[in-house]
Length: 112
Ligand code: HEC
Image: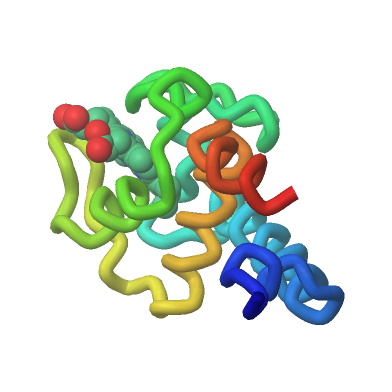
């Protein structure tokens, strides 16, 4: 049987790449995202973030697609858009937030 995509993604080099991506996502979330770090407005336990302007990400548990939509859409409600981020940065943030909030838990449980 051909390896599934989930199996391919857990191979060692892919795993190292995924960890680097999560680290980049976390840094963007807590400090470096422009125009403002996500932590300023959002609570996310994994990032020690306690912002109270936007929804608590640990509760809404967005998957990566939902995070990307929020970043791209030109902003939702009081949330600014993050169209200045590179594609790689958006991807890293989306993966990190989905992972850290538990929004990706169904997907990661399936690949274990
Ligand atoms: C200036 C404050 C602010 C910043 C900075 C901010 N957000 Fe938000 N965010 C909000 C608010 C307010 C909402 C709720 C918008 C609404 O639904 O009206 C929101 C909503 C969201 C949602 C849910 C969207 C949905 O589908 O309901 C996600 C996911 C999200 N933000 C992720 C992020 C990420 C990732 C960052 C950093 C790149 C970020 N936010 C930065 C204020 C902010």
